[in-house]
Length: 197
Image (cartoon, rainbow, N blue to C red; front, side):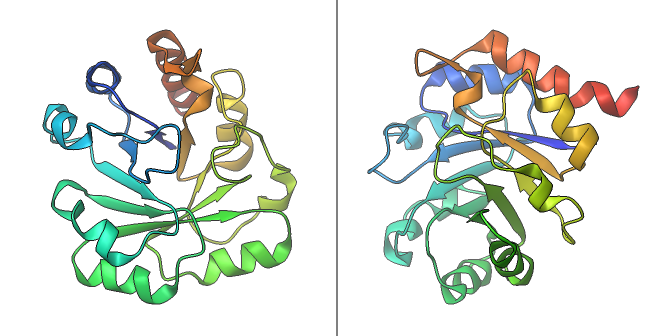
């Protein structure tokens, strides 16, 4: 069964919904340059159910900027042009690393395949909310998290067609830029239903 990652959580209400719906990962943007920056992360992190891994998302931040969050994170997600050395340094700190790759060509997939990260995330960009051409990743040879343009309406298709390790969604479960509990529930149901049919 494909797993679920809800990303872009910012409020205690978002965490309460996550605790209710039980995705497999809870993602928090910890890069200040982005609209979904979780400014109150250190206050809301203790509210997250301890059996739901917390993922901190960073974009071209150095180790010094990430280090202050490590005790509160289960995974570090790197969504920029970070080096393999940074990935390995974070792994040496005992953290699992997700490395995101923008998919536009076979070369992008080759780089993702070779990455030392624990998981790779295949996306259309950085929070664009747009879907890339899924034909590019059919038959991709390692576990991956699918992102980009996912929503309750296409989640089941993604699972049936691609069988990704996990699906990552943020804007697709929002209404007026706020996490929408109904959309979150529908997304989770869409991902989970194909696996039991």
